Image 1 (spheres, rainbow over the protein chains, first blue to last red):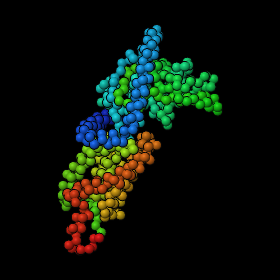
Image 2: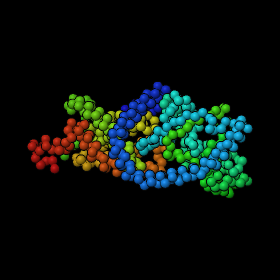
Image 3: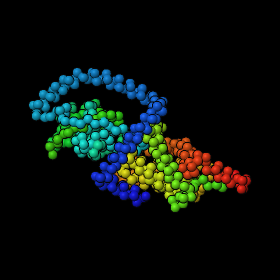
Image 4: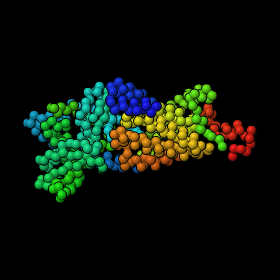
Length: 260
Length: 198
């Protein structure tokens, strides 16, 4: 059994096509059993979760109400900004983010204690997904597709340690790489002290540099903190992602041609 | 002192009846069904009970190393299909856990039902630690993180609370009866040697 287990691990790492298809089939079958079992026990599990999560749900409701108010206020500003962006994009012959072909995909909610550092999507190769495609929600960038199977795919989220994205701050013209940190789900960017650091709360968007894997002007995050490092003469900028990576239901996968 | 663990070797299967395989299969299905439908949706402090591992461990405790490893292999395979870790990791770790606990029981014995909680605790914590450690060695660097200590202590609670129930179920797999193996042996031996089993 140990030998078979090691053989399975080896095949799993090699990514053999037939093996992956068999694995996907078994996962689908198990998922069907899980759905049925979940519906059988749902009265009990619902009661348990409402008893334990009542306070969290109340907090979440309050946060959502606040966000609705903020969104209503921002709606008018956004309309004007969208019109301006469309005009500028037309002038510069750019494809606005809204016009990039996209595939909507459902996020598979992970269960269990070891859920992994990737986000699983319900769509894969058959829906036209490819490795490297940017994944977004309405508020901004979520991550990038890193593995594609027949009917599912995996996304490396923006907050995954080491995730790299070029950003531009809206209150300045400079472009700098931002790297996800291993703690607190923040991205870290560095800027020479000769440049004025961005103000707190400034929006950081994708740089849109030539051959970037992300389209330009996708919201990445807002500046949460700036610390000056005297030893390296840099301003260290901490960016909080705007997309709520922890609570995703649906995402859009952009069919963006990097031109590479 | 009576030994509850049966330690059935496949070559001795005819002595216990092929019903063990059937009952083991039914048990595996029931455990998977409850795991998928119930336990995965009943988190305690954000941690769910690793009932597939617990069933593997107690299979080993009651049925012996070979069957413990076998049950661990099958249930570990199901666990692999539920988690993003490479297929085979759960098979390997659950087999080792089932086998290891069986060896522990054969060394120290299991004479009372409450000892199932002790073996469940050792097996579950050992199995989860082994799973995370081997996984990390295989490049799954998210397995041991800041939540890991919380996962461990909540698993300890689950092991103590759930093990007697799983032990009761495993005693059915081993003997075909929900009556505990301990009391069955007492009833069988008392007429021959009253007062020996205390």
